[in-house]
Amino acid sequence: MELNNLKPGTGARHTKRRVGRGIGSGLGKTAGRGHKGQKSRAGGFHKVGFEGGQMPLQRRLPKRGFVSLTAARNVEVRLSELAKLPVDEIDLLALKQAGVVPGGALSVKVILSGELTRKVTLKGVGATKGAKAAIEAAGGSVAAE
Image 1 (cartoon, rainbow, N blue to C red):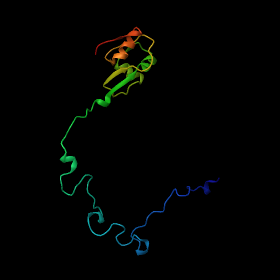
Image 2 (cartoon, rainbow, N blue to C red; image 1 turned 120 degrees about the horizontal axis):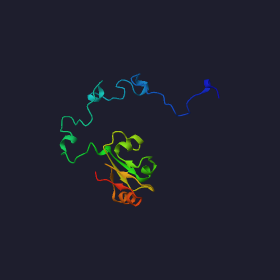
Image 3 (cartoon, rainbow, N blue to C red; image 1 turned 90 degrees about the vertical axis):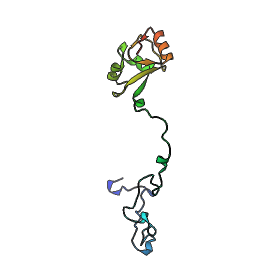
Image 4 (cartoon, one colour; image 1 turned 45 degrees about the vertical axis):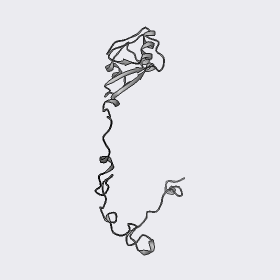
């Protein structure tokens, strides 16, 4: 195999459709755009959701519900991840420095997943009922937030 003999596999590349190049091409004159109208003209496009002046669907429907902007910044941490940390007193800052949670995290909750054999103390970090029981069974404690 030489570099000057390399070429794409068969069927990998298609010849570009050449529009407006005469009647014999099948795409001459109007170039596949049909006759008249907004879509036949250069620059003749409307924004997504535009319904020709009719009130668009996204404005006809009532606003419902609520999407929290901070929900994505609430992080879950497994017990197995806590076991790998070198410190015994665990808070949000310690988790961020260890790289367990991203820097933009606002709150952390420990979930029951994996094993925890050593004693750890949680401060300012939430825990599920099962995770709290597992931490206390290992001799640790969970301080109230």
